[in-house]
Length: 314
Image (cartoon, rainbow, N blue to C red):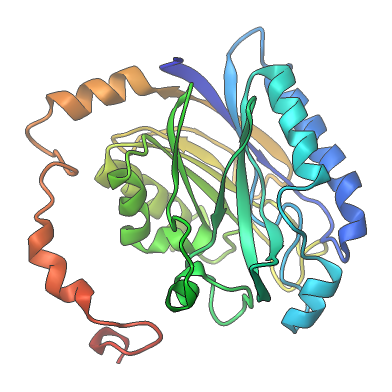
């Protein structure tokens, strides 16, 4: 069990794929970045976790679900995830893939925005975005399928050699409940796979990217490894993304961060699980997981709010 290691965020600035036929070349490019991050830094650090951003493989660029299914959506696992498995096994690492647009024969009428956790033993978990960025993102939330018998974990946490890992995607991180669900499920390292654009990026006056990454780390006493898109407007219209990928410790300290606006970039930072575990056990003050008065909130969360059904939405 590795309780101290380094994580690498590989932010990218690549053209937006128009069809699934582009995926093999795209995955080849990302695998080369893995070699840069792991092999290139090997004289200095043991990089054991490599994270890519949202939309690394495909984005919801077409105006209808039919077009997304026909042109970009894929079944997971597939030949491309197999390539990641081989690289993870070769290097002894864990890879949080950038997102795919996923189709599932069990739910043929929807498309999911999905990231895969891959390790030396294969595909360990899929996470499907629970909070699509409305109204732009057309893909489904698994939450909306619960009444139809959806029975897979919404917030899976995986026990690995490098700790208990949990992931959520971009807009999910604006909902403290989503990340708290991972922490209460045992997650020690919270991974953010994101395409978070300005003006809510990593620079004032509305640097939400930095704000929420640090807040989620502190309120869950967990490391955060957050990888953001660095794509230019030319590559991903109508948006451009500022990057700013970061590693944050369990007290909300930024340990490493890519410069905002830096485009393609690898940022590497430490994950000290030994220190985090000691603090979780030691603390009686600011014990933010141990001091949750869950009964105080049960009534609030028993009412259905989505979509727009609660008082808070006006």
